[in-house]
Image (cartoon, rainbow, N blue to C red):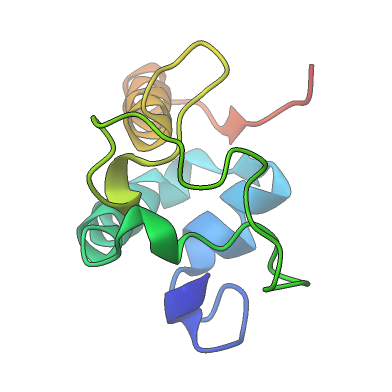
Length: 110
């Protein structure tokens, strides 16, 4: 992440150090949700043109370039799921549901 100062998981250890790796324990969900809220707030400070498409090759850009929906106003609402839902909202909903169910959360590739 752009605001982790070059070290993955340093600023957001639950999101980037755990959930990004595919798993977050129930006991870490509150911290994960706090981090997610902070990430959304920080992403509001970046325009869509500031998107990093590939962390290993910063010269790469999205295949659609700047041809994006006018609904996308900043990077906090840039990322969507394959069915068009806001990714941060989907993560928040899943984490809150896992808290209610008192279970861990796992991200799996389909």
